[in-house]
Length: 237
Image 1: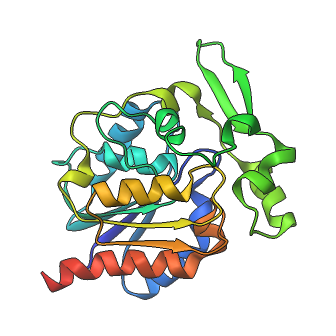
Image 2: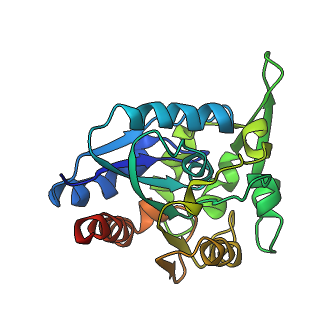
């Protein structure tokens, strides 16, 4: 049975950010699910994806973009037959690390200055990207009109989700992983991606020259090909 591919979007995005990646994956014979990441809290978001994985028969490849990588890293290893992890400009935290602490490990991120906080009645703080900064910050290699639509449809993430320490059992320690990211990512510096990929013992890490944080949108072909590489490993096993 070909692996089902579960795509987990990150902060400031929605499941539609995977649109151009889905078609080549389906054409290769895979069932694809673009999960709706709640973006409310790391543990609860990971639990939601774990529940989704439990509903799937057969092998699963998890793909996480940005904060979605932290979510997939915290998915329950026993939720299903998870055979690989793909990080698309994604966080792969160690226990105790948060997305915020990771972002500060290497120079190059201008994310903090681009955020717009909104206090919620439940005591949490929603973070979104300022519309006037979205193109340069997230999607510099995406056409301006498309980036403007992405800015208008972005979904906020809670500050608490980005600041929560990762759990004690990162899934990338137990499953093979692949990384793809942009050379000019202004949210998660390429140096940080190289660092995370190396400590995860990644099967492969691809740095796309000149690419922004919006890898799945601007470079869907490269993204889909790496995901298919991850699915093929199970087929060869």
